Amino acid sequence: MRKVWMKLDFINEAREMAVARIAMYKARMAKVYNARVRPRNFQVGDLILRKAEASGPVGKLDPKCEGPYKVMEIINGGA
Image (cartoon, rainbow, N blue to C red; front, top):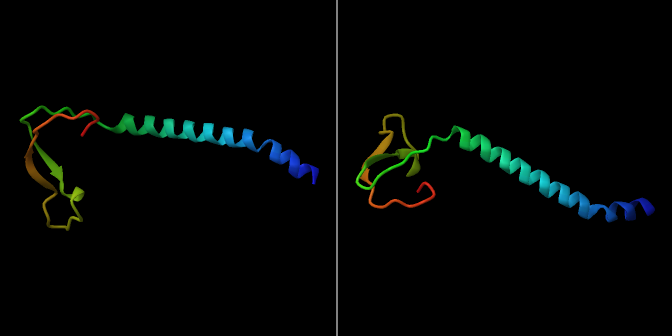
C-alpha cells in the first residue's frame, strides 16, 4: 500500500515531465515541417493555380489544378 501512495506523490512530477516532452516533440516536428516548406509570397493581382485535391478527390484524367485565381488581398499567416 505504501508504494501506491509514493507513486501518487510523484504523479504531478510525471505529468509535468510528460507535458515538457510533448512540447519538445511538437517543436521538433514544427522545425522539420518548416524546413521543408517553401515560402511563397504573392502580390495583389497575381494569378495563381490551386491544387484540385483541395476541393475533392481527383481522378486519373482530371486536371490537377484549378484556376487561375486572382489574388485580391494579402492576409498574414500564409493564407
